[in-house]
Amino acid sequence: MQTSILTEVLLPLALAFIMFGMGLTLTRQDFLQLFKTPKAIFVGLLGQILLLPLLTLSICLIFELSAPLTIGLMVLAACPGGTMSNLISHLARANLALSVSLTAISTLICVFSTPFIIQYSINQFAGENPPDFSIIGTVFGLVFVTLLPVAIGITIRHFYKNWSLKVEVFFRRFSLTFMVLMIFAILIKERATLMTSLEQAFLACLALNICSILLGLILAKVFSLSFTNAITLGIEVGIQNAALAMLICISFLDAPDFAVTPGIYGLAMYIGPGLLAIWAKAMRAKHPTNKLAGSA
Image (cartoon, rainbow, N blue to C red; front, side, top):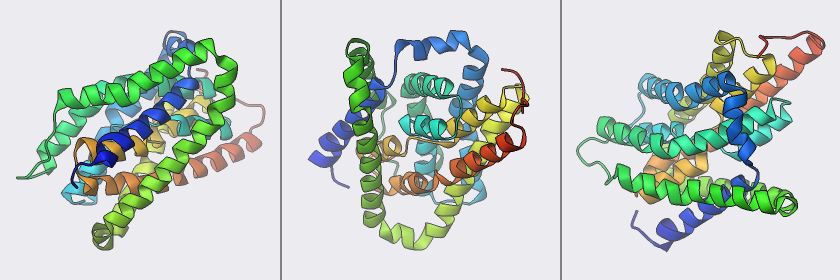
């Protein structure tokens, strides 16, 4: 895919716009939550930043995905979920404060962790013709399309809270629309790849979605977190920022075929959280007054 105004300018600007909208939903208190509930935050980051890429690598090997599909899925695993996970946490009656704080802190960390995961994936799977990739360049790119817009959004939220709350819905809708349009554009452009590997790629994405949610639940159980926090971790570990992953594949790596699996995951990633929300509702109905897990 040759570089163009679309891949070099418009897509990064659109993502920066989305990340700015995410910043409008955050406050400084969301980052300070790390010191108020350190165990829950630590466990969530352990799942998102460290264990999820390892789980993704295992799934890629089990399903024997091709190099482009594998690298694309690894890029996805390196991109923690954005505001969509917060919305799903709200709908599932999870711990919204924990969800938002994990979103804020993981966004900061992934600017530095994501490039190393991408470099490893390219080295391991790209073969003899790897795409041009620079860790330093990617770090700076992520700073400008994620970290800086988020920081600006947080600052504006601090001084113009009422306006920020009013436009929050607009940014959420724009984010969802942008992601859906990008997914369909990628799937149409890479339809030849889809014709030969759609079932395999979809099953791998679905397996990752379900297993990552289970990973969050298991971590919460191991560390004796509450039922509500367990649901939150299931959602946070199970929802990834597909739009960011696709942008990295298209604009940073100039490899739209890598964006196929993030695109498929962007459609499949709501299945697991939907089932989780149904299960959580059933458990709350069955045990309306009892604590279901832990105390944290």
